[in-house]
Image (cartoon, rainbow, N blue to C red; front, side):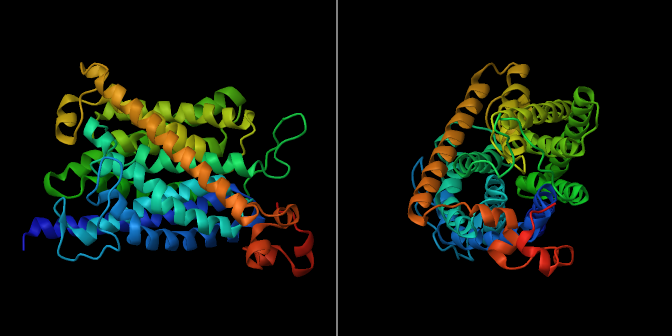
Length: 424
């Protein structure tokens, strides 16, 4: 057997493992960014919904993305299990595992809009719907020979497919669920419902940062030519630039080097470079990361002013930065890298407005589809399930106790205090 074929498969399974471990980063990030009374719930629902997403993706999701079909959706390869197939120089099962990890990440991003107020049953039902149809359709359009792929849309590792899709579903959820109790005063001014553990949040970002090399570098789908190293370089530079830019902008405007903003800047740099990591020069990766770090701060302030309660900042980190990252290739894609990886050169390299226009069309169409379909699904869920938000009493007690019967920090929540706990 060809040793390069074996190495490619080993490499992608390692990258799959890194992307799967990003769920651990999300557990720490989300738990640290929310209140103590919901920490166990966040950890537990993440593991459970990754399980749901895996089964649904195996049954229908992969087929809707990569099956033979039309420009809108795939229509074959359901209940995937062909051990003889090869896809892009990989064993079919290896490719399946890698794509599964991406679908699970998109779902976890979407659930940022549910944080601290949604019923566990809402997570279960939406996990099925999102993994079966919302994510697969967008992924097919761009990665599965759909109509956006035919136009030459550039999205190397998923700024649109994964991050924007998840963020638009999160936006639909935040609108339907409405803000958490106590987030806004009667005059519309916001209160700071601070997360309970910034160390968890920082460690979560670091785990995600490391896992992102599986996400981006793994999207080269092999070791031949070692192009994954170049992709990793751009990924690192953008993340670093995003963290620095976010810290300095919040420091300059507020007088304090706010830690959550700095951490979100690093993530925004990572999200932004995800589409363009294989298309741009390293200097452009730095610029993309800097702009990602700046706009994530502006976006966080904007959504808070609009009374859209987003505890995990999914809309800003994955949505706004995902839009910027996707559009950035229309400016910065080099002719050589575009020729290697698809599409046309960017505006700044003499490519004109062609690729920029394609990127904008891709962002608008994918974002609208994910938002509208998610909104419809959630509205139907509200009608059929009699609501998807926990009661006021359950929200005040915390979802750890209300949905699971025990606190994530039982030693800090004595038995005699559980009935009156409001979180800290």
